Image 1: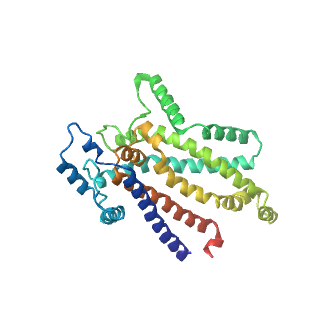
Image 2 (image 1 turned 135 degrees about the vertical axis):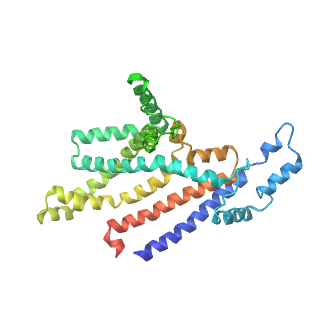
Image 3 (image 1 turned 120 degrees about the vertical axis):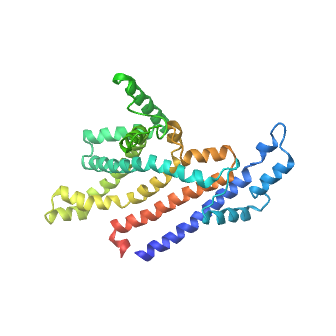
Length: 325
């Protein structure tokens, strides 16, 4: 199994480099980062434009520029923005913001989604199944920015009705200007985290519960489950010891790739709630025609997605003994 995982990891590293090179090349072909200098009134001196072009390696062929940038990445230097700011300093702050925002929401959403899907399958066509199905269809058919805006408005309405005007839910930004002890800082972070996390959890529960319900229904009528009950296991024990484990196998890929994509795909959530993470940075890089920012975010996305793929292989090996053999 170790050899299998190592081979997969090597493949993912190669794919990561290919994806980053493709994004770097497309950005280099489409962007004109010197336009801001050329279109100024009065225009910037030609010497200034030439110096900026040399600083951004615009005179080099795209493959050479990419490997120049990549060699810096291996040394911990992701280059500089068009505005001459170090990307490395901003990168780790934004990675931390995105992970804090999405990691908790995705984890809670997966756990609740799996439980809801399992219960819906076991209680098929009962009132609880209809409620879960209706909830999932409503949430999945509603755009993310609508759900986030509704939750934001609802939280603000709750705040307006609290005694003394106390603001329990804070719906803008990742943290406030709290200068107290650890408990005060932690409470402030949680108050900022509750509503955006709820927006993520709702979409994840709706998404995963549908897939888990379908996977569990396939297992409920299987021969091995009836055999386990015939050998003396109770229905509940057979379902959770054998049925749920088998039903989780096809879900492993969804869990892993869902995390990898959502971390950098939650642009609406970040912008609506003022959490300026990697998704927001990607939009900023495109708006400013900054190839280095786009390449850096793409590399982060590729690492997240491909690490998630490798993690799904690990989950398969844990859940399915045939992979380990």
